[in-house]
Amino acid sequence: MNNLTKMSILKPANEVFESFVDPLKIGNFWFTSSSERWEQGKAITLIYDEYNATVDIKVMEILENEKIVFKWGTPEDEHIVTISLKELNNNHTIIEVNEEGFKENDEELISKLIDNKEGWVYMLTCLKGFLEFGISDLRSGIVK
Image (cartoon, rainbow, N blue to C red; front, side):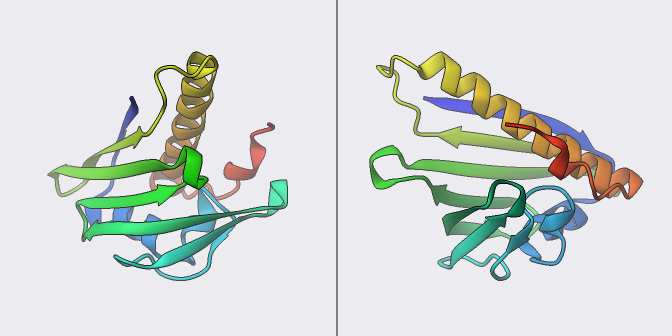
């Protein structure tokens, strides 16, 4: 089962793409930092200072300015995330985040899907704030 989230960003696809893959930019809207530039086949460590947490991802596929696919989670609960970018014109990109791997027989499925959707909507909102308005301190505001 998957969970799809979409948002419109009033910036070109290359700016949206670079916000994810550039370790100096990701801290402006999502994780505090990234261990290195995201490239296909790389294992990346994402650091979240506010929760004293790290998350390891494996970048499975990169299509510059179009798509990022990565795996994350424990081996028994691994998910695949696909971030797709569709540029409608030179200053407007639709971003889709699709996370797959939710188990339909999980008793907590609905709660997990809601929590997951909340996280992606928040991240995309912070991305929009950063790219469109230069706001880089929203990401640390969510309380879990």
